[in-house]
Image (cartoon, rainbow, N blue to C red):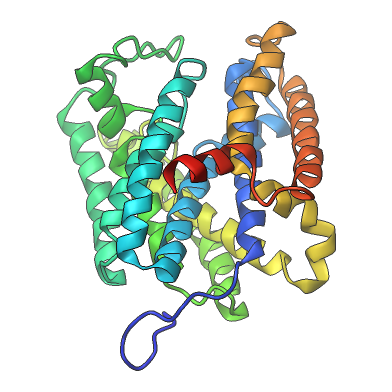
Length: 358
């Protein structure tokens, strides 16, 4: 846990560029999933390797994104102190909430307005010890299952179009935010808490990096195995329990949380390992991209999906067309990030947030 004799957390290592690489990989996964949704790709109509890849990334890429946000907040608090971090985080949460709600007008699956709540709640948890954070992760996950069993998870949804007609009402917004939205607080806040736990580790040490890779891979494998075995048994002998054993992101059940944490640990550890000195030159463009994930997340909706809409490519497309769109956007994003990083340290959206929120 990187603790000195007095029990206080040591200062974290200098900037870990491997986390920028991990953020880039998480963003790539989210682009693949979101483009697939927007372009209407359907695995039943168009099965194959690309469909399997997109299915494997569903929810896991976003979970990694949220975990890395929690990790970043935890590291920032260790550098700046809890009080200063809480004050800045409150302002940035307001910025993300406004940006996310505006983004929701264009893309209903926006994650930024959920981020705003995750950051604010996470800042309130910064002083908790690691064991308490893990316990809170479990509590959030159990609470999500309890809510799903107690209330109607389908409330507010039109699943044929993935629209949420009552989103802009007080009741609908709150229900979507904490219960049955694309990334509700219960259980998605567990991923942010997982990031806070990871921020307590000595992430610059090779042993810790390899443990993240091994542990993440094990978590992914275990979630898949339990989903197949227990889900199959439940479907046969106890059909009412089968929905509780899914690894799908909707509805998000405990095995999905396990899979998301596994994916986040695997990507984080892999990013830290690959970003070692001998790989830095080759991976520098991806690291530059990972330093602008807020800018590029917004860009993949405004520019990426906007272009697809102008070309008439939203809905009814095949996975090969999704792959082409992802390749074009990501290639352009990396090229832009490399050029921009030669003149500026941060992306436009990141600079705007810092200017407005400190």
